[in-house]
Length: 457
Image (cartoon, rainbow, N blue to C red):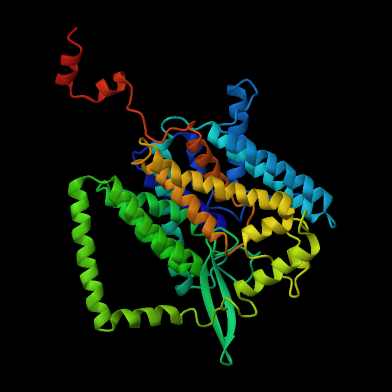
């Protein structure tokens, strides 16, 4: 049953592309949201995007005479760190699970390299279109699935109570004031509700930038509405915070990219919204909204509760420093050291625990430097300053990295694929502005009378 939902999301995403054709490799962005399901092989799950990347790899090797080219020094540096990460896990490996899990990291890295090596000058236009289509297709399926769950929760693979059991909505249970509180959180086709938002981060950035620049249509507004709905239904506090930050950042970027007339309209809109907000605050409407919104989190753990994030992180940091500060304690091994068998619940802490300060810390610094480079590039490069593509990848990587503070997912595909694209952009090997079509193609698009003038013969 779960695969019916997945196929429906793919079909709707393909329909959402409409007449905007994209090269075959960019369909990868329609496959990345399926992060939990695939073909089980030797303890691994071969996900759809991995199968697709194997096809791309074989095709690339055949076309390039069995060679694979790196697009940037960033990619080379991350490749070296990934190999060191595997070596470190061979050294501190105790149960075998650490090394087996670590071996998946170079696989994901290789697939990211293969994908970026196939991107051409049209990627600046086609990748945002693919991201927008994925937001629409998967957004429709997730909203419909949530509504269906409310009507018929007994439908197979719709509502689940365990992380390892297939299900689009995951039900969490908690005791509050002696009463059992049940909450359904959208997790889509991923393991955790905190990671479902990445698909909609990228779709939202593309949508908001086009809306601000007045280049939006039905697709952009639909993608933004669906993205906001899905992030809200995930009930991820980190996801909601990231979404709000994302919208504000996109308005700022879009304002700087827009022409004078559009800027004036944005100013009038902001003044109007500010006036309305002041009135709502004075009348007490906004405080009531805030109280109602915060009430839904009263049955959730606070930061310093027994199961709160800060409590977990403090315990994990203590384990890391005591058991393996330099070389780490192994990938995915934190749960065996904590009192109640919990993971790190933080990708960056998991990196430190898995690879120690030597490799895990260096990988953390690598991602921070890459993010800094991604945000600085469009500010210092005149061609990228008004590039939708450059800002989409930079802001998208920022939101993905922030969201991973709430969940441990070192091999997260969105992290590595967006990092690879960003590394190609900042190194100058991937254009951020789509080239004009060739002269012959432009002539074919001209009216017949104009073609005769351009070609008097």
